[in-house]
Length: 394
Image 1 (tube, one colour):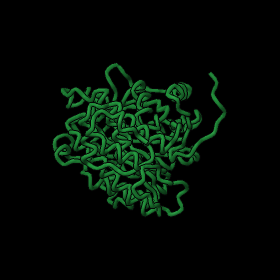
Image 2 (tube, rainbow, N blue to C red; image 1 turned 30 degrees about the vertical axis):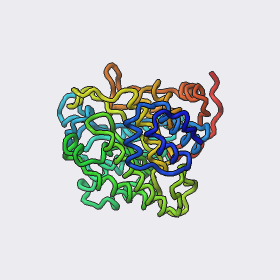
Image 3 (cartoon, rainbow, N blue to C red; image 1 turned 180 degrees about the vertical axis):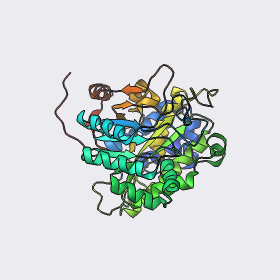
Image 4 (cartoon, rainbow, N blue to C red; image 1 turned 90 degrees about the vertical axis):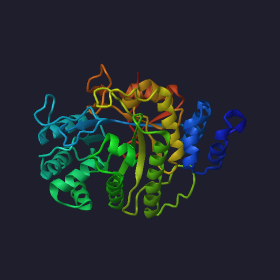
């Protein structure tokens, strides 16, 4: 229960009353949260919801990111990752190389590989199927989270198949779940200015809706801190909330309006839903939007907290330490976030000045940062099932 007396900005009282009553917030509530300078109240509200859902648990996993190519048919203004074929720095990994990296990750204790890349104009559909089959054959216990919704739509064009047919073929080859990338901001104004040429929100949602119908769990993202405004961020989150409501209903879960974690548990319906939302902090360096300042630390914290408050029916909110930085990600664990992602090891999509693509966070350090916040570190698999291992001693 929240004490309204501790919230000096009375514009937040309607939202605080809803949080106390376990009711979802409206578009107006979300805009009021962004407009408020009562940052402590926003963090307090998000922490109340987080603890209601997860108590003192904070999740992490042992994972490995693989970016199989940076060659891309698109030229999104916010992206510093893409290259054109033949351009300096362009690369495309052979299937054997991807499988070898996955094998090394599995031997090091990883439970997940996270595989995404550019929209390569000339790779055949068999390349993607053989990649999944190769990893599945060599690492049968390793969960494969791969291909954003944008990549899935690209593969429909490559293979001349429907979204459903592509997802079925990938699932049968070894795909375990979908990452949430490519969502950016669900708004036509922002889309047309920053990533025109990329599929619009209707296709992104069609991919994830179809994946859920096929029993493929997925995540969702929001890229913030570029040209979008707070109202557009809130609209984005409400759209995610609405699809989650549909997916939960199809799973036979009557979540209603409760601000508590939906009881997903074992999936007996053959359906799936969103596991997690990952707000991604825009990094302007090396992009065509390099003239923009990018989000401040306060915007980062507000956005992570507001995401927890707005998206009541998606159980997990991730503070992705690569995007927000380790220090701020640790602070976010008291601002509504319950997940730090994992060890990662290699990340080539975005990087701040002075950072390379080798970005590794050791399990011992993850656990220490979680414990410093008063949380209990819980290793998870991709679907948030808890993993028991021998304890790590300093």
